[in-house]
Structures are given as C-alpha cells and as structure tokens.
Length: 301
Ligand code: NAD
Image (tube, rainbow, N blue to C red):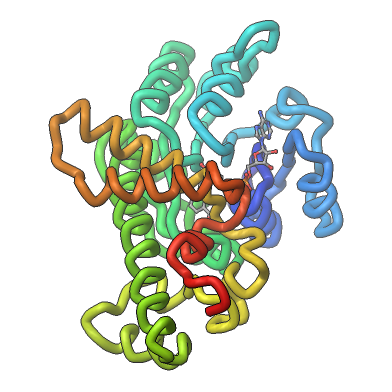
C-alpha cells in the first residue's frame, strides 16, 4: 500500500532514491539543506518541505540519507540550539537511516528512538549512484527483524538486494567492511591500469582483459577509473558526481576505528585510508573517489 514518507538528504544518492519512492506512488515529502538538491527533485514532481520538521509531519516512515555521523545525530537528537526530530515523531513511526555512519551512532539514535516507541533501523546501501537511479541498490540492514519487515516494501522500491546483517549497527559494520574492500580495489585497479598504460597498453583493452581475468572486480565491471573507458562512469565526467573522495575517506576511517576497537589487522585498509587522505589533502576531496587514479597516473599518460 502507499505510505506517507519523509525523505531527508537529497544528494547524489538520496535524490534518486526519493524519486524512485515517488515514482512507485508513495506520498513523498522531501527536504535538503541545499537548494539546488531540492530544486532537482521538485522538477521531477516531488513535494519539497520548508524544513526537516515540516517534512516529517504526518509521515509513517522517515528516511535519512546524510553524509556522516554528526549530521545524523544532529538531525534526530539535535545539536546546540537546534532541536532534534525524535521528540516530534509520534510513537510507531519507523525511521530508516540509509547514511553510512559509525555503528555506535546508529545505536545511540536507536536507543533514543526506542525510549519514545519509535522504531529505528540502519540501512546503509551499496551500488553507487547508478544503483540508486536504477533502484537496484543493496541494503545492509541492522535492527529488529519485525522492523525490517515493515521497511521491506519501501526498501524494495529502491533496491534489489536486502540483507539482514544483525541488530542495530550491524548494517553499518557490513557496509564499512565492504567499503574498505572497495577502497582497496579501486586503488589497486588504478595502479594496475597506470602500470599497463606506462607500458603502452590501451587502458580500455587492458581493462577488458583484467575484467575477464582473475583481477576482475566491481571497479572494472561498473566504475572504471580511467577517463573515457566507460562513458557513464564518473571518470569520464571529470570525476563529478558519484561517491566523493571525502566520503570514501570517512568510511576508511570508520573501518580503522572499528579495527582498533576490536584489535583486527587491516593493513591494506590502513594504507588505503592514507592514500585517499593524501589525495583529499591535495585538493581532490570533492571529486569522485575513482580519481585516486590521479595519484598513480603518470603525467601525460
Ligand atoms: P552527498 O554529499 O551527495 O549528499 C548528502 C546531502 O545531505 C547533501 O545534499 C546535503 O546538503 C544534505 N544534508 C546534510 N545535512 C543535512 C541536514 N541536516 N538536513 C538535510 N539535508 C542535509 O552524499 P551522497 O553521495 O548522497 O551520500 C550520502 C551517504 O550515502 C553517505 O553517508 C555516503 O557515504 C553514503 N553512500 C554514498 C554512495 C555514493 O556512491 N555516492 C554509495 C553508498 C553509500
């Protein structure tokens, strides 16, 4: 059945996700602090609220898709002068946070929600902006099974795979494991391509060889870092849009914090974090993360 849904955070991912819920016939009210982000969705017929408080009025389901932990904590629990949303939500509301944040923050917000009879699940996603647009995202859910079942019809309109990873926060843990691997694979793929091109190989031919060989991975399948190899990839659009270097850096930082807490060995994850940090400090934090290629690409290649 059609539900009244509030969607907060209309960036590279949240915008197309909210649009898919709207297209599926749900009554979607949306909000973002960025005017251009709101305008894009308004042009597609989605109702835009004046602020987050107005956005959640009367909503049965509240979805957030924000950059990082502090944004999610401030939105729901408040910060400084700004009141959080939780006290405004009636008991029985279902909150679905799709942002990639610290598992500890998910649990903090979930605990505060539970005290008010509000259900909370963490449901970070994978699949990139292409997956968000196509509605084929993978959701990694942490929370009660019953809450996931309530969320499922909504998640199914945005994604193709829905996994229950465990209790609240478990979705986040699965997500940072995945993104640590993705960060390593993108850096490694860039390095291999740069090596081949330095030897005179055509990056498109080498990409196809490796894609069909034992080095094949998601970067080569869907997100090639070499400009021009895949017309739809951010690399072919001057690394605009996509998944920001600073967001990848955040995820690699979360993975290292987690590894420290549980005394896990993550040497390649640690090295990958340092590479993306150097890339960000060089001024590329706002570019798609596949621009890590620039760190290893020979000038003129
Ligand atoms: P983005 O920076 O494009 O969008 C975030 C949006 O949140 C911005 O438009 C910003 O204005 C808005 N925002 C911030 N604080 C707000 C607030 N208090 N109220 C309303 N709006 C607010 O980021 P994105 O690429 O859409 O990523 C969102 C989350 O999803 C991040 O946690 C990221 O790590 C994760 N993620 C991204 C990708 C990707 O490919 N881009 C893939 C999987 C997961």
